[in-house]
Length: 215
Image (cartoon, rainbow, N blue to C red; front, side, top):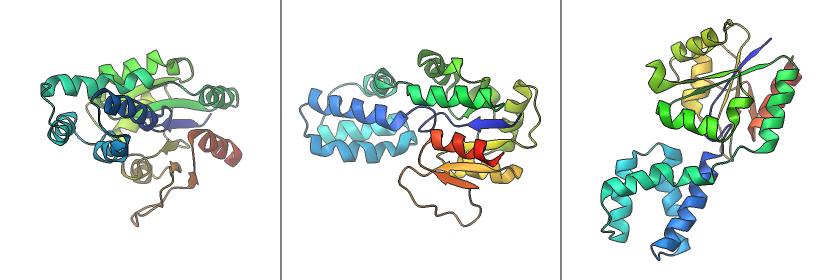
């Protein structure tokens, strides 16, 4: 039974899509032009920008008087209201499980927030388990977090796959362990010359299909 490590953000859950929907509403709320949507998306950097830094940039750009801590809370909670599990992703995970794959979420982030998203969206019904970096005390691409995930489901790392959209955290982690990987390109070109994914696809459903086809 092949073990499949899956990223959370922009892999199993459309974090970027939820943020974009929130950003549209936020611009309307403060009376700013929707032309600024691309700026809000760019400065977020797929969630890699610190919420405090992002809050400061937004306050400066729009001369907002709202306290920074309130805006940080909004940046944390606002996009979550728009986050949903795509039913087709749930279906793909069910098919994968029926075919003998064991899907496990491996994600970097805050434990309470990540676990809350997994449970609230119903993703917990479709995966064998999950490991979150804050809880684990180690982050992707460190191989230890993947080893911990394998231990959680009492399986070996040998034969496992890694699926995700991050070249460094996901594909770099797979390369460090000598495991095959599937990169979700999201319209990007692969640029890293240190390692390369085994497969390149557009979304997680195609990624699961690629793994099943390789068996």
